[in-house]
Image (cartoon, rainbow, N blue to C red; front, side, top):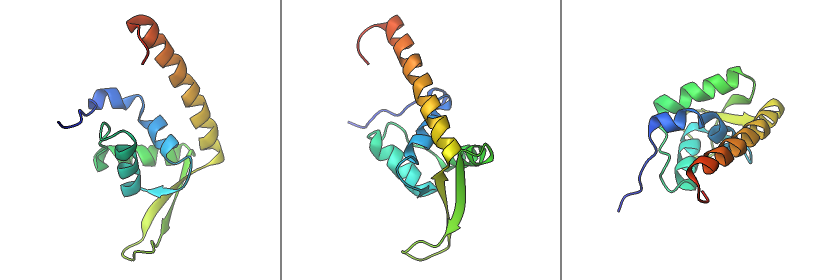
Length: 114
C-alpha cells in the first residue's frame, strides 16, 4: 500500500516551518532537503523543485537562511547549500510555537490526540 501524500494546499501554510526545521541541524542543498523531508515523513511530504526553490529563495530574501555555492565531495557542478541563520533560528522558534498553538486549537475542535 502506498503512503498517502499531503494535498498541496495543506502544505502551503507549513512549508516555511518544515524547511527551517530541516536546516536546523546542518546545512543542506535542495536535493538533500527534498530527500530528508520525504524520509522524515515516510513519503507524506514529497516536495517538488517548483515548490522548494521559490520557497528557499523567499526564506533567503527574508534573511532566515543563507545560500552559498559549494563543491561537493562527489564532484560535479557546485550546488547551493543553505544554512539557517541566527535570525532564522529565532523565526523557527516562533513558528514552532505558533504551530503548537494551531495544532492544539485544531485538536480542541476535532477531538482526539493527534
